[in-house]
Image (tube, rainbow, N blue to C red):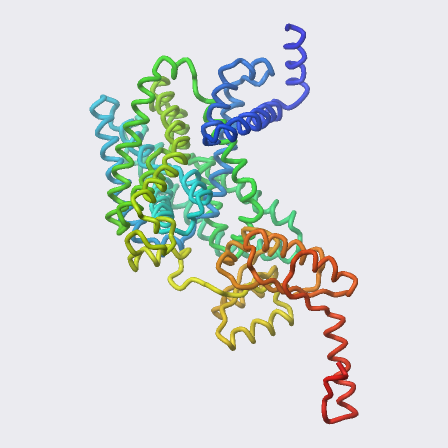
Length: 576
């Protein structure tokens, strides 16, 4: 046993400790995920248990990576990367489209949650600063978990998902204000007004900096990188931006996680947001996994076991009270009763930003260690229960004959209100339907676009030339800077509602990759592809493409027609 321990400790010394910790985390996650899948349990619960077991089993100490600072660093990395992806998904346009649930519902939910939690804190004699922070944490929910669950349930564009998104966007905005004011709120200085003013000035300065670079620095840099046609350079640039803004936010005394979220927001308002999402989104689940495991790593099992009844009680009260507040806010926002129940299930927990606020309060010594552990354990438990609660909520709604909860129009439930119908349209009142997706905007793509528009057929263009995309958007066309091989780009083009997809450039490997992904996303989609050489026809036919246009054949027909017409004024079809 001693020899075995020595060998592992030796490995921990020979290999960077963070790599050893990450290896243990990911390896154990695979095993736990397989068990949870077999038992049909939420993977998030498994991640949380995984971190809990690793931190309290002695395995980390055995591997020489039991240092608390190392675990906290992994937690910080997980939060930073996760919030960067959430920032990219944040959209000012979405906020405008969802202003009713965001401002009315979100404002009501945040205000009531802060008041109730702060009142409870004052009753427990925590002091007004700690009580206010408790209110901040209580009002925030898990955007990552709720929206991912809506995606898994096939309801990403349903009214309940849109209301959830609107309220979550308002929470995100409030988080920025909370993090700016946090140091001033907990300051023990007698001159609290000056500290508050200084905090506000830092926040304003940080915001102004972000606005300036989003207009006069970032677009030009991304334009130059996009023109290089290097996918690797583009990804490195985006991650570098995230790290730089996170570092600046940390230097200003805010939070690296807040800076990462802000960097994502800045990118989300550029034409490159879909391209960035397609590069980063595949890793979002990984970031969420690391985040949840790292939360489990921070929990002291001895404290939780001694107070397990209190942890369960806090979690239960949180889910019921906050769920009730969210339900009321959703109803006030104009959502039907059954759908409001689903929104309540989605937002009844505390969230990743609650962990960020708690971590910051730990640094500032706001709560005693016992209360910190109770809050951390209750937050993790409530977040882990969200997917199960949402699934139960959807089943309950359907059992009450509200089949329309799935966003369809099959009878049995109340009809969608005009407002509910509008907010279920991915942020646009007149959403695209039965349209054609054009991949590439060269001469063929331009001609196809022109003819489709002449028949009033809606079109979305996917193009990798930023200048072309900007020009199309300026002219009022639907255009995205996105690689058509990526699911996120096709999803943004609303492929599930499209009738056809046309690849207008004759690049065989890229074309096959596009049609393979497109066919997986929508089986009945009509596919149109150019083929440069006749020898490649068999590969295209094997890919189940509906219409393959052979360039050699089309060029040959055009050549025959032109040459023969120079000898005869009448065209004979037999020539072709």
